[in-house]
Length: 267
Image (cartoon, rainbow, N blue to C red; front, side):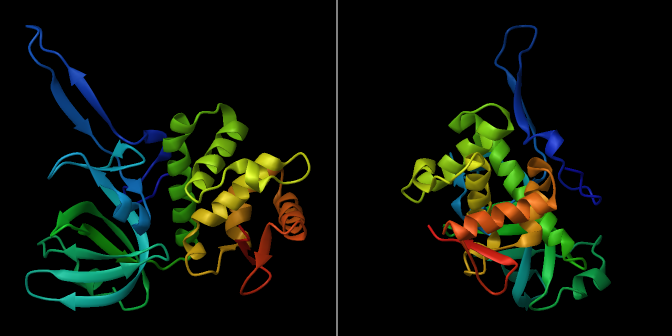
């Protein structure tokens, strides 16, 4: 996928790495930390772990530096020392704290309004055993396509990060493995959600896509356009995705929610 045009995430850059470099005298290696910007959901942030106090947080077993997310602003607490935004994205709720800076654009900061979407870039911190985001930049989202793109980026990075842990090689087997990895968290495996026909892996991948979509938590599910955006190339076009959705609905694996373009899983 393409880069964010404001210094954002590039999936081709990887997730950052730690490189050991030994001195010529054979002394202990110096560790060089390189981090990229990772797209995440609030649920992933809240589930992130630390191996030691004040250490880097880990998501999918990988250290994270800066993160980027899109969320709705539900409360704003402005003070002279910091602005605290309570944000939610359908997967969870978290505080995002922005400390004043001489480089802040007052117009952009004041454009963050209640119940609107915002793009946030920052780092994950912990205070009193509670995670929060230390905001480096925050701006309003003016194009809703950015929300869809972000959700796809989150899933792409998650699948890439977990692929090696669950096995598989190539697009088909890696998607199947991702499906088994996700379903195992719900106490079932991909064999329990077997689909008919020769597109079992794709059908399971679509189910997993919907289960990981921010709309799942609210019961709304995933929009048809999001599913098409994720699977049209793999299936051979938009009409093929629509045929697959119809088949999965007829087989009882999906159902429509708010309207005919929103799908949720039955398992």
